[in-house]
Image (cartoon, rainbow, N blue to C red; front, top):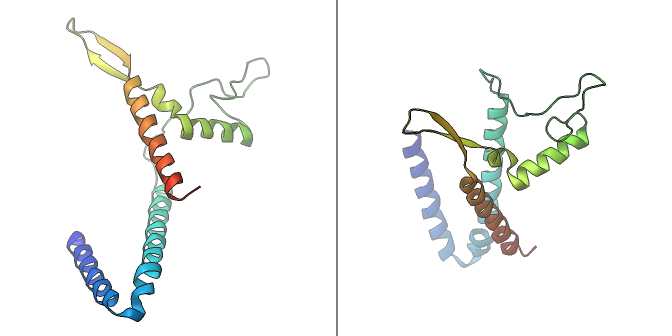
Length: 146
């Protein structure tokens, strides 16, 4: 039902834009104001959706670090794998966002012919994701003339 409602709204807005584009005085509204309003509406909706996801309870703990955390003074703390300070978190998140570190460590399991479970890295998935996202970023930056 919600998809049908969205389709009707898009149809009505498209019809209004088509009629308004025919009127000379409303062309700037259709060509300038309407696209910016659509982008703002999209971004506000995305932020609302992400905030809603962030506020929803998680039924299980998802481990995001894999190194030795800061605990006893005689144990070496892995600053990149288990950040403790704000700058360590910023550094780790930058590496995660820019280089997909967790996807690089991703392993896939496969049952071999000898009925044995084997773990293999999926570096091709990491390379493809990296190429896709960096290409998309470059296209976006060039499109915005940055």
